[in-house]
Image (cartoon, rainbow, N blue to C red; front, side, top):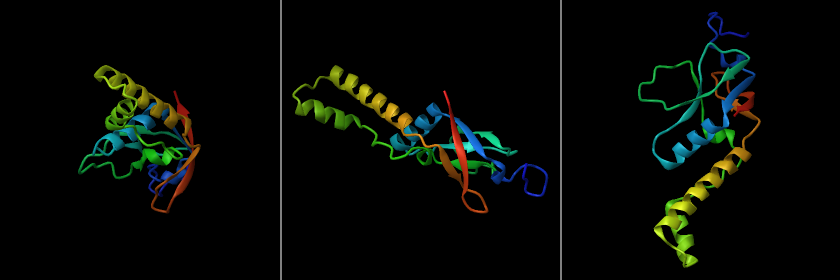
Length: 143
């Protein structure tokens, strides 16, 4: 395994494949689009050929300096826009079919359709940010 010379596996260029759950990608992307909370997929040392990327919300002063953070949008090719409740309500009103219950049902359906579309748009490779520049790795999806 390539290392940084210190023998502790902190060189992320050792990674060839990352494994991540599709649900973690969807959750991170949805969190970033729906709120001001920044969520990433984090890969932590010691680095090896195959690594697991896990859902993570960095906090100010986060001390995991050697971790690699992958923006979830980098794992999705052309993600569709996230549906808003206002857009759902507008479509129902245009069709003269608005009720509170129907609005709730249709918006839940729109969000689920968005989640499926994101899962259908997951990419097979991503560039990891490293001190030496971008490092291309394959992505395997779990679940």
